[in-house]
Picture 1 (tube, helix red, strand yellow):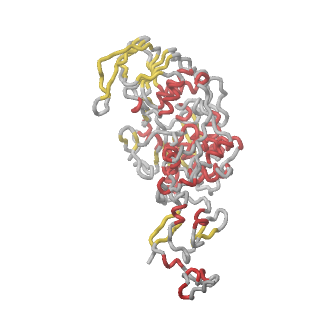
Picture 2 (cartoon, rainbow, N blue to C red):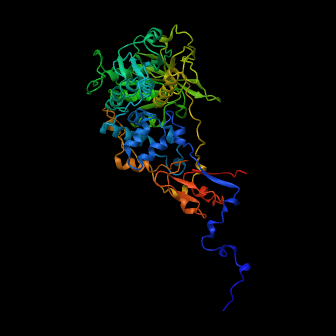
Picture 3 (tube, rainbow, N blue to C red):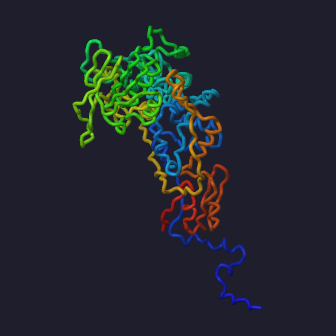
Length: 565
């Protein structure tokens, strides 16, 4: 039998008495310490409306849809609308896209918005009345968003708009097959029921006069004026504006009921659907051009052609819009420009790109049959209401505003398409929220300063080994043959099962979701669980700073920092 080792020859670890490891505080050994951090997820960082995407997805993936919706509504009052019309830059930035496919954030947002309408969820106004009155000029996405947030902050808000129904370009520029009007009206009605006053059919021509009864004004008139282009045309040529075509299609809706209160039009104008003919040429390459061409098909055009002077790669229209138009039979004439229009035909000239990428004429011409030509060359805001308003400056056809979204005229703020920005519904909704917070601060004699963003949760910080493959859910779509015969919605939504699955694909980038990895891998048992929803703390008396918890955190929510000396 081997004799036992003398005490002085035993390894250190087994010379300790039972329980003595607690007395040996190994935390003194480290040079770095792990700390829990909350990083900014790329989805939220890339959202023009400033949504806490990761935050509401966290609740959605647990099946708590109402809480998810309420978190979402803190930033965006129109999830059912945005879930249909937003071009989802959040998904472009989503880290999961580098693993398999981006999370279908937009689809889950739509599900939550539709669920809220179905269940009748409302938003309470809990702030004490401020006694201040704000006039919002324009009932588009920016104006409605500002009205919503200002009301929640305790102010009395009146929205004035010259149109017979609210919505702005959401109603008069986005076709029904992309945004059904019952959805649009339901989400606007919720804002009205919070106490916002609507004055429809009222045109504000003198903000100074209007300001006499209000403490602040937010201008959000949108860009409703179509840009023109000189096209040599004979007397019989029929040249129309895309914005007017889309508006006229809206005010003469095919087989749909009129607006429900409180949006009943003050009068019923004698509109009828625009008569475009069987052969329609749309001149332009943006999303409005795609909407005009697809609308022409639904109005009976057998041949709808988009003429654009650059290549497809340079088209400003989103790729999926182009794909859907082509699926519906819209033809594309890239590298082409309209030389002249006469009678029932147009002459187009083929272009080619020079070394700088600018299109140049080639002298090669082609005739196309056309009953009408629809110009979709962009839009501009009508800024005539600003004439004579002191301190307001214009630059490149838009209004200059400060970081607080106030013009040079004290108390007059502006946002949406009438200020320098990308022109999308999402950007406008974000403008409305930001303007509301600055207006609130101005009315209270303070200054709104947003908190600085946390460091980004980049893909390299994640431990993606822990996430299993999960392909994105696909939303159902109408087949192309049916689309061109109806204004029914083209893209459907997710059901509860697929919405839940899609929400659970979120990797919670940069935020602890209590997976217990750190707790399980810590060799020093230095991670202490605080209970569900309370996360963890680190006992630095015993943490040696090995960094194993950082390496194994799936979400990148722990980082090492130098030890304080």
